[in-house]
Image (cartoon, rainbow, N blue to C red; front, side):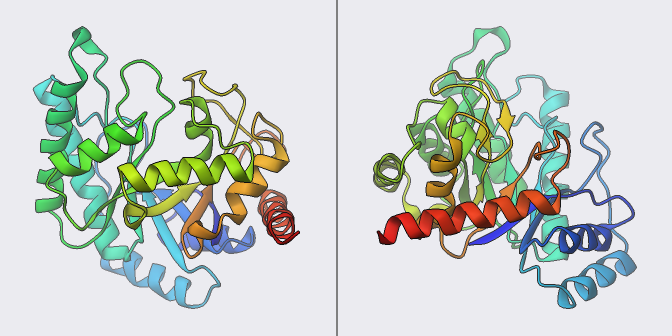
Length: 289
C-alpha cells in the first residue's frame, strides 16, 4: 500500500512532490486546477519536466489527480455538462502528461428537478465516455459517495452501472473512500466487516476495477449519508476501523490517500502520515494474531 496525502500543487506540480516528500508520503494527490474555478490549468513542458525530475529524486511512487468538485457529469444544464466535460478531459490530459496513476472523479448528482437516478446515470456515463475518448491513457476512477442528496455512486450497484454504461472501458475503475463507505451504510469498522464489504464489492463491481483508495475517518455514524471527515482514529471508524482499512491485504500496492483534516484540524502533516503507518502496523499485527 502506498500511503500518502492530498497536497497543494501551488507553484507547479514539482512543488507538490516536495510537499509530499516533506510529509513522508509514498503517494500524493492534487487538484490539477483551481478547485473553485472552471478554467483548466495547462502545465508547461518545463513544469512537466520538473515534476518528473522531482518524482525520480523522491520516494513517492504514485500521483493521483482529483477532478474538481464543480464537475457534475449528470447535470441537465447543457452549460454545466459542457464545462464538466472540458474540466474532466483536462484532468485526464494532465494525468497523461504527469503519468498519474489515476484521476479520481465524483460522478455527479441527480438532485436537480427530482430527476430519476437512471436518467442521471445515463447522462453521467455519456460525459465520462466522451472524456475518455478525448484523452489518451490515464485511468479514470469513480469515487464512491457518502450518499447525500442525489449524488451518484453511493452504492456498488450504481458504480457498476456507471462503469458498464460508460462502455466498460479498461481505463475505468473505482476509488473507494473509507469515510464515504461508512456514511453510505457499509459497515467497515472491523476487519471482518471490511472483508465482507469487499466480498460484496467483488461480486458487484469486481476487485480488478479497484485502482485507488481514500483513507478518511468519519465524523458521522454509519448510514448518515453525510460527507464529514475526521482525523484518522478520531471518528466513527476509530483506530480499529482505520487500522483494518490500512492493513487490508486486497489493498496492497494501491495508492491510499489521506485527505484530512489532520490531527491539528487543518491540512495533512507528517504526523498524520506517521499515524497512518502506525495504524497499518497495528492492523497487520492484529491480522497475524
